[in-house]
Amino acid sequence: NNMLEIKGITKTYNAGKPNQIEVLRGIDLTLKRGEVVALTAPSGAGKSTLLHIAGLLDVPDAGTVTIAGQDMTGLGDRRRTAMRRAGVGFIYQFHHLLPEFTALENVVLPQLANAVPQAEAEARAMALLDKVGISRRATHRPAALSGGEQQRVAFCRALANGPGLLLADEPTGNLDPETSDLVFDVLMELVRDEGLSALIATHNHELAAKMDRVVKLDMGQVVPA
Ligand code: ADP
Ligand code: ADP
Image (cartoon, rainbow, N blue to C red; front, top):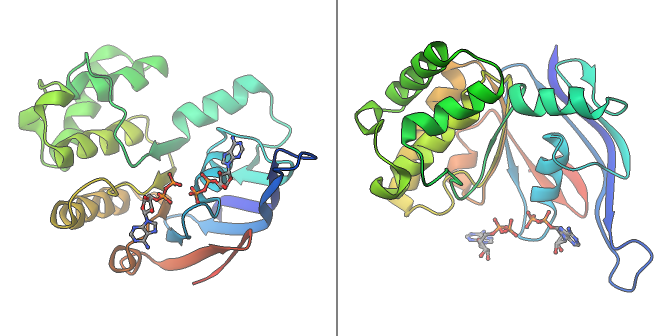
């Protein structure tokens, strides 16, 4: 009963060139349903590459990615895009919200792209904003929000289409330590509440310790931390 199964993933950049770099050298990693795993790694170890491959934003040289029991390897572009859109939520270090749209609209838009009717999308967006404690900010644009609020909107956007899997790359990495701790707890509550499986990259050992399990990316392989 696994949400994510990664097997034998390899990735080399600039293959055959003098600057060739073998980033992933046979990654095996499994996330059970509802399991929250911390991914730690020194900068440059390949954490973003691994998250992008797990989230179908990049393709490996070899190996397989299975999400919710479905092998993504041989899947056509349309089915991959559908899974990326509705099956997987992504959170980055920087929020990447659309500056011209309100907090609410930023959470509504991915649902419209997934053919959810407007009224239903707005109700879901408001419920999410409420869960992270910023429904009062629904009509503000990102620039009018604090860093912690912006990131909370980004969490809601990532979960807008009800994915089973969440991938996060330093989700509170650009916030000051105090805000980071607070906002991270909000994220964990949301993840537990929605029953998600999550792979969350972080440099922060205290935050990592709040998850079910900690793994590290070392010499191109995933090992227990
Ligand atoms: P990227 O994924 O863009 O390569 P990282 O997320 O790995 O960057 O690192 C972000 C920043 O955090 C970098 O400036 C890096 O120097 C710094 N950093 C790396 N390791 C640690 C650490 N253990 N504690 C705090 N900061 C770190
Ligand atoms: P991390 O997120 O752990 O900092 P990345 O996955 O971003 O690591 O990068 C791992 C290594 O691969 C780094 O040395 C980086 O410079 C290199 N790299 C990442 N993306 C590319 C790319 N598109 N082309 C060439 N090299 C890349």
